Length: 265
Ligand SMILES: C[S@@+](CC[C@H](N)C(=O)[O-])C[C@H]1O[C@@H](n2cnc3c(N)ncnc32)[C@H](O)[C@@H]1O
Image (cartoon, rainbow, N blue to C red):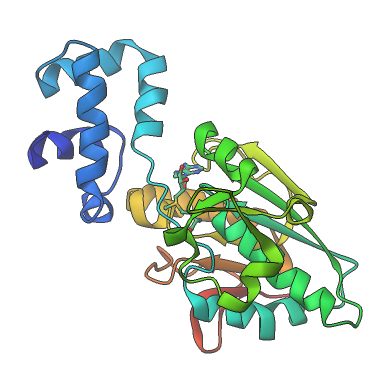
């Protein structure tokens, strides 16, 4: 197992936050160590030197450092607010354009689709919804496209919604989202640190990734980029335990919700 100081040196190399990784470091260390042994290396110095010489190893290591922990309807209060306040605030649009930035295995993407579908089923004239779901890690994106989840991923999903949106896989404790839920979603590889925002959106989800794991300087840089991708009147949603690195011009906290911000018209 890597020691904390060794792990700290790798985080430093990638400009990542020790505090952000504090609670999840065990699993990440294991992954790194496994790769390290495969490469026949024994010391952190050798691994850092190998990174200096091999850009492909740098990319691979960045992916190994990503944390994919998520759940459908993670932070239940947010999904209630989306249903009651945030989506209705966008009701005048023909189409709602949403971006799930750092979507991992798609849990928040399908949660949004379900809340939107429920809105449409309640009748009235709910606008359509298009979602661009992006992540640095193509392995997570492939799993997101498949839309198969274990019971633990579903533990925050309201029980009464399950029969309508999930099919149990025969002989397994796994559930697959119904095919129609996959409509209107584009999955794409995208790096928040180096790629420009992939469009302009009414809703941007930037939850439990950059604002937790990146250095303060990178958080500011990413937030500036994300802000250019957020349309006036749109909403930025961050993780329940996260904070914005600084007040972003034009963004106002949404009353009663610490993780939702509204961009002035
Ligand atoms: C913990 S998951 C969060 C998933 C979901 N947003 C949520 O809150 O439940 C973090 C995801 O962010 C992705 N990620 C981390 N850094 C990224 C970056 N620079 N660009 C794009 N995605 C990134 C990781 O690959 C991972 O899938």
